[in-house]
Length: 625
Image (cartoon, rainbow, N blue to C red; front, side, top):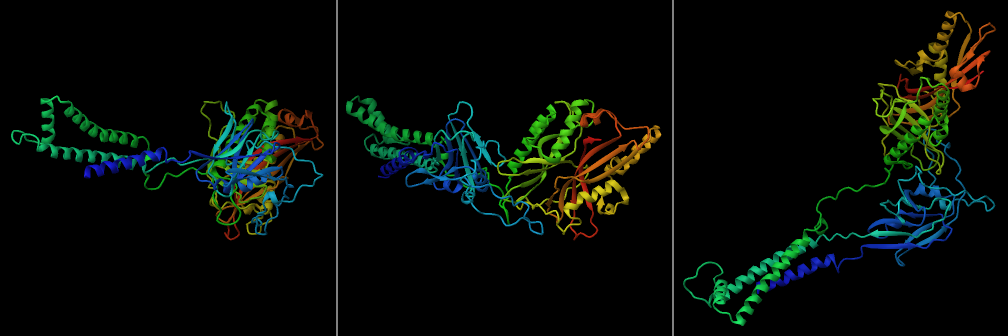
C-alpha cells in the first residue's frame, strides 16, 4: 500500500510540476493596441497607465521613423504641450489603448526671473500642460519638431537597421511618461501598442519535479521490497542467503522454465520497475533546466531604474546623473568637431554667450595666424564629481558641471600635456532646446571647491541682488573689474582672496604699465590705458551646501593704445588684423579681452571671509579702432 501511495503521489507531483510549464502556464505576453488618428504626430503614455497591467511593459511602435522616449511627466508634457497630440490610456475592460485628442496650448510665460527675495525658487506651477490656455484659433500652427536627441529624455530608441518596429522595455514611476513620435514632419504611420511580458518563472516546478522523482524512487524501492517478500515463500528455504532472496529465487525459476506465462510476468515486473525510473530521469532532467524552476530566496538583485532623485523639499531635480553624463558627452563631441574644423557654426549647436564668443574669436585668429599660441583645452566626455543642478520644473534651467580636459591641439595617441579641469555653466532655455554652454572656466590648480548641495536636494538659482552674501552676485564682476583696473588702490581689493593667482600680473593695470615701459625702452612712446567692466551677459549664481554661492560672470577688459599726437602710431598686424580686418598704422587700437570667471562668494555670517577666485579663462575676443 505504501508503494502504491508513493507512486500515486509521485505522479500527481510530476503532473503538477510539468503542468506549471505547459497547460497551467498563462500567456507569455499581454498586448494592448491603440487606434490612432491618421494625422497624429505625437502620443503620450503616463507611467500610471503602464502600471495597470502586471508584467514588464514594452512600448512597441511600428512604421517608418518610429521613435519612443521616456522622461519625467513634467518634461514630456512641456515638450508636447504646444502641439496637437493624443494621450493613450490602458482600458483593462476592452484590453486596448484608448486615445484622447489633446489640443495644443499656448507657450508658457517665462517666469524664470520671478524669484523670492532670498533667492529661492517661486512656488512651482503644477498646472498640467494639457489644461493650459488654448492657442488663439487665428494663430499659426507651430512647426513640427523632431524629438530625437533632446536632453529631456531619460532614454530613447529609434528605428534602426532592418527592424520594422521599435520595441523599448520601460520601467517608469507614476510621475514619468513615454513620448511616441515619428520624425516630427510625418504623422505616426504604424501601430502603437504596449506589450506586457509576463513572468514565466515557475518557482515550484523544480521542487515538485524533484520531489515527485524522489517519491517515484521511494515507491519503486518499496514495490521491489514487497515483491521480494511475496517471492520468498516460493523458493528453497535453504542454500540461498542475502538481500532480495525472493527476487533472486524468481529469476532462478525463470532460467529453469521457459513457460510463456512466466516470461510475461517477468516482463511486467521489469516494466513496472522501469516506469518510475524513467519518471525520475525525466523529472531530474527538467528540474535542472533553468533557475526559473526554483524559488529565489533572499533579496532580488537591484534593477536599473531611470528615476530621478526625489527632492526632499520644493521643486524636483530635473536632470539625473545619467542625463548629466550624456550632456557632457554631447558637448564634448560638438566641441571636438568644432575645434578640429575651426567652425563656429558647428559650435553653435552646444555653445552660446561668452563661451561661444571666446572660441569663435580663437577660431578666427587661428584660421589666419596658424602659429597663434593659444588653443582652447579639449573638453573630454569625462564628467567629474562636482555638479550643481537647479531644482525646478519650469524653464530656463541651469546646471553647473565639471569635466576633465586635455591640452588642445595634441595629436591622437600622443602623450598629452596636463590640462586643467573645466567648469561649465549650461542653460536650457525652453523644453524644445538642449542645454547650451554659456560659460566655460579653467579651474585653478590646488583649489578646493566648496561643498556642493546633496544631489537629492538640488540647488537654487539665486537673485542678483541677494543681500545675504558678502557681496551681491550681480556686483561681483563689477567689483573685480575695479580691482583689475586699479589694483590695490581699488576700494574692493580687500574683498577678494586672490592668493597666488597671476591674473593681476598679466592683465589689467599691470599689463598697461608693462606695455608702456616696453614702448619707451624701444624708443616708440605711445599712450597706453585700460578700462574694465562686467560683461553684458548676466552673471549666474548658484547656492552651495555651505551657505555661500558660486558666481560665474565675465569681466571685459579693454586695452587701448594711441599715438597720443606723436609720430609713432600703433600698427595693426597679425592677430589684430585677423580679428578686425584692420591693417597698417592706426591712430588708436582697442583690444577687448574677455575673462570668464568663477568665484565663491561666502555668506555674511562667516565673519572675515573673502571672495575666492576659483578659476578663469581669458581670451582676446575683439579688436577695433
